[in-house]
Image (cartoon, rainbow, N blue to C red):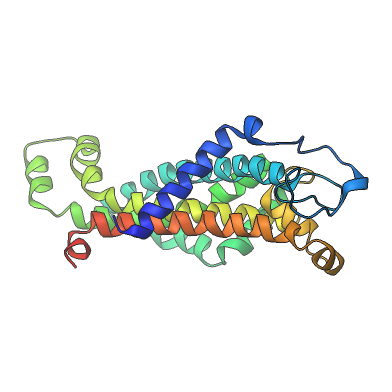
Length: 271
């Protein structure tokens, strides 16, 4: 991997450790308010300062890592599994099955921008972490399905697949043993980039009030609470720290995705 991918991997490992160890790393109760210490700047007692209600921003950022990684892992896992199954099914059998799945179902979901469709679904389902995850899973599987469908269309014509078919191997065996293991590499890259997209989508929807409801320590909620002009003038740190963490998380997953793409592609690795 290149250096940026290694840096991204280190950042992701730190985030995972922080999310797992949040109760021990956090220095204050994330829900404890104290108006007498509102808008305190970063100090030894409050590493990232305090927000409009006197809550410790560092502790809220630490617990926010749990929410973001939880959303990313669940959304990517469910979307990848559903997308792989539907994409492989459409690509392998082709014909009217492929026309229905890729020609109609895909186009329905791709007709709208992803974030706009997520906003509509969350507005319909209602706010909440579980409903947010469900909405992102509903719109997230299409990218994986299109990718796997294209890979299956290519791999199914290889000689070893034709040989397995000629020897009487079942369709399920051909798909699971011969095609998917040779078509799965781009999915790994897509999953890494999908984690970045899921984290950013959760923050965006929470910022709009359609994701994790306050006072949950979501990074998007923290930015939404600090976005007014008076807060920016009195305590810019309330906006800067969660914003920087979101940017670092998204960049880290993108760096790892680019590094995996280079590593798994022999032509780019040779360059």
